[in-house]
Image (cartoon, rainbow, N blue to C red; front, top):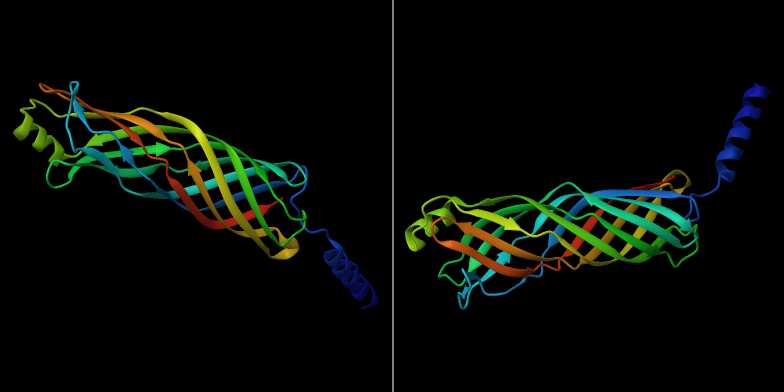
Amino acid sequence: MKRICACAAVTLSAVLSAPLYAYEAGSFIVRGGAATVSPDVSSSALSLSGSELTGTGAAVDDGTALGLTGVYMLRDHWGLELVAASPFSHDIQVEGLGEPLDLGETKHLPPTLLVQWYPLQPNSAVQPYVGLGVNYTAFFDEKVDRNANDFFSSALGANDSAELSLKNSFGLAAEAGVDFAFGPNQRWLFNASVWWMDIDTEAKVKVPGVGTIMADVELDPLVYMAGLGYRF
């Protein structure tokens, strides 16, 4: 019994004296959660084979996917973060042709690299942070909606299905977030974060028998994420 009590006392002492996991040089932080990309769209007028279609423009809906981030603490208070996600999907509309026309959809991946600053003490249970870096957005799997193809056929005389393409983008990114630590040694985190990303693209719709419809589109979204994190 004395040996059992002694072992229990040693174990409890070790647990109580174990260091808190902190935002300090050499530590890693992973975070994941639901991320929503909310574009702030600014579009040029559509042009058809060089002729501007006055009063038209593009609109892009929000998209939600699984967001993932990984941070390596370069030194106390300073981290390097890589932002990744499962593919986001967005519906695209054309405005200015009467009722909004469902043009199609696209998917994208937004890998982003940021340098972060954590202002509070490394062992703080509540830790806000800000970051600045660069974003690369890759668009893929673009599809034209059937209703859009029907419109191109009936209104423009298209003789086959149209093809949509979006140019990949490279630009600045900024973020702000906060972690709330909980659990044994404060390893676990509840995280809320927001990013702003400079995303500009050129949209092209090749309409067989008609020509190419083009527009320059600034997306510049806010990206919101809430989820859990873990420090080790």
